[in-house]
Image (tube, rainbow, N blue to C red; front, top):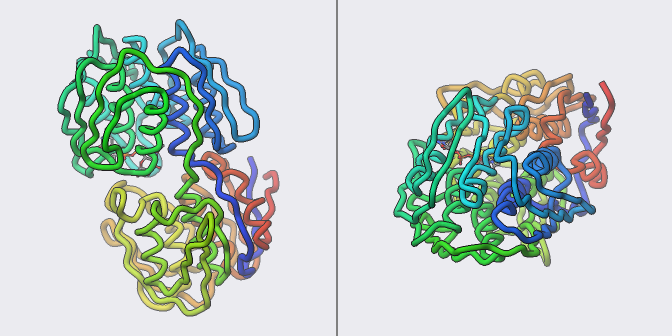
Length: 420
Ligand code: UD1
């Protein structure tokens, strides 16, 4: 296992190039199962979750080759139909093969994901949506066993108690591309990754309207063709660099950053006194020492992303005054808090809110990563703490950030990956 060793106190300066969006790459790779043709996908980040998805697709019988950020996928003619527990326990997003398998091959067996570090994360909406399309679903020995004669388009209300679901929207949208008639998904997630996946499906010949709105319409077609597609830049990676730049009082040009994907985040940074500028091909984030405390409440897109709440909190640990971060989507997403407290942060949790009293100093210490985005928060905290911070269990981080230590190193950070 590797860890990061960080010597804090250096303002980040320079330019960083974003990788492609992990959360778009995973469903898009899975959606390549819907065609008989070859798909060429560019802008795929070199992260462990992408490798896990590639292994699942290979297990199902697909042929996959990688060349830098380009992946070629030739789907199987006669697949295995099954995503076993050994993959799904590593990565929940393995469930993205469910919709494409059932639509294309009328049969799928996918392990139930179970709980995860940040909450219970049920899959009821995925199953409800597919059932409404005509799919029979049984849960047998911890597996979702799905089969159908034919999928039929329908008007489906897909939002749950916490609002829309990115995963369920994409799974149902992908499956509906090969159904008869028209499917309307009401209460659909509007995240840019949903739109990217819809654009990939359209590139394969699917007929989809209004992805990016809460009402997506999909007119089923008989077959989809292979295509060549480029993934959008990763907005969560962009936000992570924006908070890192702001936290270190730095000045960073985030190349590939799209203002339109980050409005709620940039708005909060501006409220905190951070300078944001649109530049050709990206966003420039710069900050002086004086920042004001802010309150953040996460919400589905276009609201403030839950995936950036921990990184924002890391910045706020050193912003004078009281800030409040409220998590509304996942019930256990403050795993970074006890570790930030080990670095000297003053944070208390009340219900689903974290109350952060900004401190003058954080002091470096050994801390432990618990999930992907909490790990990024600890790295940011290490960058602004005095002395040395080591962040262990960074395999969590490697699931979703490509070469984070190299990109930060190029911005001047003193960060090293060492074997534990
Ligand atoms: C995706 C992202 C994840 C992000 C999350 C919310 C990927 C691979 N992951 O996860 O990084 O944090 O969106 O933006 O893209 N829910 C149900 N029933 C369901 C499905 C979800 O109740 O069947 C609930 C969840 O528990 C959660 C909320 O809906 O409270 C939103 O979850 P969802 O949007 O589905 O998250 P994921 O797609 O799993």
